[in-house]
Image 1 (cartoon, each protein chain N blue to C red):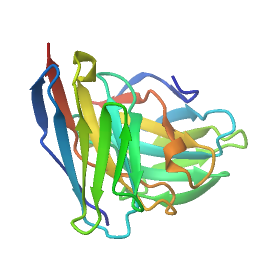
Image 2 (cartoon, one colour):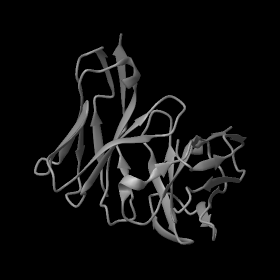
Image 3 (tube, chains in turn red, yellow):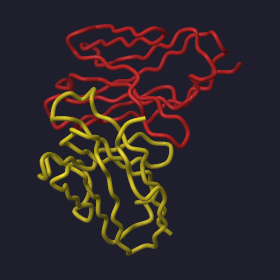
Length: 113
Length: 114
């Protein structure tokens, strides 16, 4: 089955700096890659996603890139703010396959004011 | 906040007991997926229900079972609880099988097995 690895496990940045989180996946059939933000004690919330027919997607300060050949995708957060502090999860799925998501182990992002 | 609700919020059980967790999906959603999130880990897919039928299962033993009702609410049942079953259990609902970007998580049930 699919194996998603995520790095780093913790990331500490200064407010205003950029943060990059990287994930790799193993199943070349995976074609949908969502990113979730989970604040302490709360549910995961979708923040951005990308499908395999595009290489990059942006939404304000957040962007995701996908390299299908290398089987890796990354989350980029620019101009970080303290409220960006949370645990971020990447996931991979085959969109036609029951929406079964394989999640990475998470990155705890700490944005220092 | 999404319209997905779960009950109870927290639960404490002992080894060997059985537990039932409940999920009410968002209005109009006919697909419910269940995930187990151990502390410090990403969610792991348990199974999914679509129109009252199991529609895919992850690597979980048969003592994890589920149901979906005609109103599309769902239950997760775990028999013969083990210590490693302690986790946050999340359900997620979506309007149809496809459209993963429309899958919304509930707040979760924190299960502690002593």
